[in-house]
Length: 148
Image (spheres, rainbow, N blue to C red):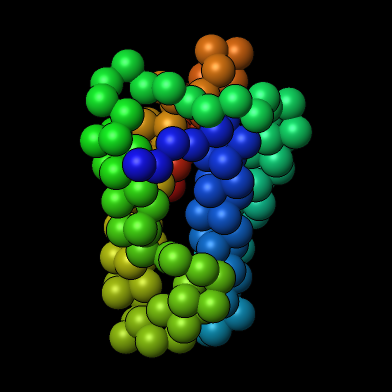
């Protein structure tokens, strides 16, 4: 059974965002079109901002387990499946995916999938973190929606 603490959820969120930074930075480095380079750099900077927000939330988080209002075993398995289905499982995978993208359209399609996955994860996560942190997670969800 997967039971998470708020700190662990923030750690996962930091990892997701760092992997997004690696992906967008790789695309920016490879881009020859100045407009694409600027767009990828902007998205990487937004992901860096999210890393900072989640690190601050993590620093203030408690260490007790998060107890969902549903069956813990099922919900833990569901949340673990969300984590495991992430497009970017680590920063090297993110960089490799950027290199293998057939062009800007495919690169943006991969990014779109990753943004949607993160919105789903953060939406679920928002209900599990302390009430005082939910607004910050909601703001990140809104920023991820803007990326989409």
